[in-house]
Structure formats: structure tokens, C-alpha cells
Image (cartoon, rainbow, N blue to C red; front, side):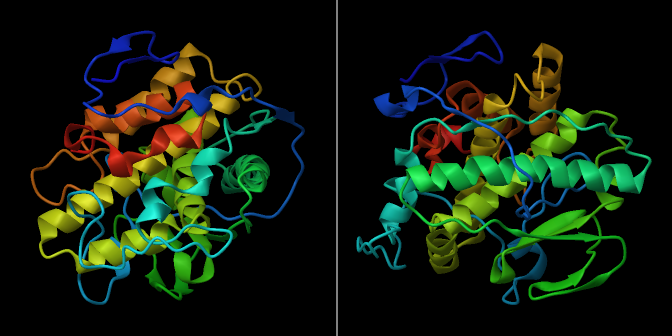
Length: 325
């Protein structure tokens, strides 16, 4: 049974599951990189109240399927082990991805911008500034992992519109990621409404880092294989279990970024506690349609990423079942 001590919580966790533990290279030294201003997009976030994310598949799949499924790779979907010279594909895209080989995430300087959630212009500036930081860090990380990386496209909406994945907004959804055009569609005002008018910059930073993580999954080839095995699953329960692994990995990868900017942003003990509270609130509370993981697991994977600061710590695809419930 793996055991780890979180810098965030300051407590030892004994329930991390048999057979799971980050590899030794998650302890590689961090490097510091000055932040530059670049264009960017986020990834698949959509909050329902303050209690959850909504995935684009759940919003727009024409066949009515939802993201998710149970078990580890091994369905009738393509589980090949070929490499295209850059990205691993098939089952290896999930479990042996080059994203896990780059060491701790590059540490960028990311001072927290001022934020007035009641002012749409202030919120938009905040979103762009934080995603600039995300761009800088993940572009460098993919370079270290010998993979190309294209930042996502930002589409921050104030009025309804059409994307390759469908029309927006959808009831209860503040944002979504459309892999078809690597586009993040985010309602600048809706994100505040769907986050209970939170006054905490850390809450929105958590949302951004989680959703950007879905774009990271896409660029690493993880999303393609995830969608393949999810689509080949026979039952809704299997599909939901696959989705939980994807969403909890996004929590962890988002936490990785948060852990690297905790000094410059800054994220002190109070802000870290708020982030983990938000991670809990956006977990699954009902018995049906469990696509994002239990509140405890949502918190655990976020804290784990913040503690380890390394994508290699976020391999939810091989984690024990109890960690992805």
C-alpha cells in the first residue's frame, strides 16, 4: 500500500491503494522559467453549480454516450503499442506516455493578477494571464518530454454561439473544451455564476488548471485513446469509470501546475485549503452518473499533484480501483 505525505495537507495518507506509487524520477529538481505573454486556450471545463465539471462528451456526443468507463486498458479498442516517433499510442498513451518522463513541471513566475469577479473585463484579464502561465509551463514540459505542443485556442464568450462540438451555452455549463479545434469555450460571466460568485482567485485558478490539463491530455495523445476505449465499453458504468480516471488525472495535472506556482502566485496555506475544498465540491455526490470521482478522491488527486509537481505522479490509468471511485 503506497504511502505519501502531502505538503498541502501536512498529513500522511494510508489509503492510496495497493500497487500505486509515483516512480523515483518524480523527484527531479525543478527549474525556474520567466513567464512571457502568449496566446492560449484552456480545456474542457464546465461547472454545474459549484459541484462539478461538465465534459464536452457529456454535452455533445451524438450517440448519447457519456465520458467514462471502468477498468484498465484492455477492451476491444485498439490497444496497439506502436510509436509514431514522438507520441506513444494505444494503451501506452495512457500508461507509458512520454509526458511522464519530463520530470517536475517547469516552475514559471506567475504573479496573481488583480481580480474583481463582478467586472467582466477584470475576469477576462485574469483568465488570460493565468492561461499565459499555463502555456509557458506546459510548452516547456512537452519540450523536455520530446513532444510537440500547440497551446489551445481561447474562445471566451459573452453571448451564445456555435462550435464544432455544438452550440453554447448549454444549461448548467460555464465552459467546455472542444478537441476538434483545440478550443476552450468559456463564459466569462457564466464562470462566476456557476462558481457561486466566488471571490477567491485560487478557485478560478484551480478551474483553469484542471481544464488546461484536458488539453495537455489531448496533446499527449491520451484523449484519443481514452475516447477509443470509452466508446468501446459495453455499459454506462464502464464508460463512467473511464471518465473518472480521465477527470481525476486532470485534477492531478492541474495540481501539478498549482504546486509549481505556489510561491509566485502566491498560494499559501489558506489558498491551498480553498483549492482542495473546491476539488471536493466538484466531485460526484449522487449515486448515478459518477464521472468525476468521489469528493475524497477529487481532493486526494489534486493534493497529490500539488505535492509531487510531476506529471508522472498522475497516472490514474494504473491506479487501484479505490482511488478512482
